[in-house]
Every structure is written in structure tokens, then in C-alpha cells.
Image 1 (cartoon, rainbow, N blue to C red):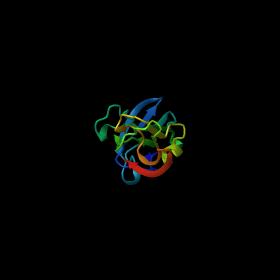
Image 2 (cartoon, rainbow, N blue to C red):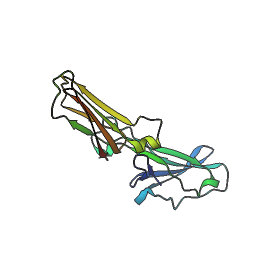
Image 3 (cartoon, rainbow, N blue to C red):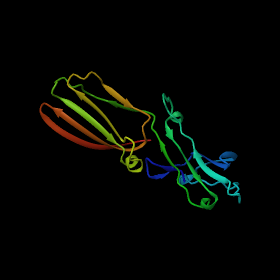
Image 4 (cartoon, helix red, strand yellow):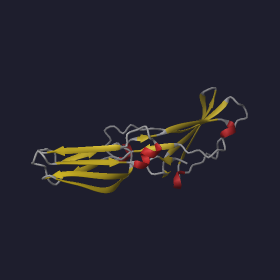
Length: 182
């Protein structure tokens, strides 16, 4: 199963490769695409009796840098190596797809230097599955901030929990929301 670190579910439509290696050199390659639920199978692959053979499930990565369309967006793939004795184990190679672009438009600009707005986005499922990588995005504007929009791209896709912290004329408010970025 191609497992999506961002949604805790299988990911359909992913190219998955099986490499058969002998003495660490690839001697056979197979390719398939994950189906519903992220499941995939290599029905024509051979299991070799010789212990010199090892196997690898390989899902390639893409950087996504300067992507202009969804097919070019960041994708963190993986490689799982295994032996003949582990061939029948249900493998879950974990992948991390990214989202292309998210733009935020601010309807007003703070003019009082004591006013501010801070916005944080947290991808909690990604953080649970990959705890050593950043999972929080943030932006803030303090009085006389001249931007009317901001954007993010190439971050892990999925459900983001949004916290909006506002200070306006001495009043402090916090609002919460969620957004799904595919």
C-alpha cells in the first residue's frame, strides 16, 4: 500500500517500482500504479531462491521547486529494501505529497502600530507520522504592514488547523478554523 503521511490513508495513482537486485545491482525492474486505497501488486515478479538477491520497493521523489501545475508539485517518495524471507509481508511505503499553492488575501491592512494579526497553520497528521520535520506555517503582520496577500506552496498536503490571533485597538481575539489543501 502506498501510504499517505498527510492523510493517514492509502494514495491511489502513484507509480510504484519493484527492483530486484543481485549483489546490490539492479537486474530486473517492474512498474505498477497504486489503485484504490493505495494498494498495489507486482503479479509478474519472481522470487529467487539464491540469497544473493534482495528487493526494493521504490517510489520516486520530486522536488516541486518552482512548480506551476499540480503534476509538478513536491512529492517525497521512499525506498524499502527487503529479502526473500520478507517477500510476503504487507509493505506500506510512506509518501508525502505536497500542495501547489495556497494564497491568503487580507481584506484590511493594520494602520495602528499596536494592531497585529498572526496566522498559524498546523498539519497534525503529517507531524504525527513524520515528527522530526516542521509541520507549522505562520505569518504575521504588525501595524502599517503593506502586504495584502501572502502565499504558501510546496508544503505537505492535507488538513491544516488554522489559528488566527488578532490584536485590534487593545482587544485580543483568537479564532480557529480548518482548511484542506489537496
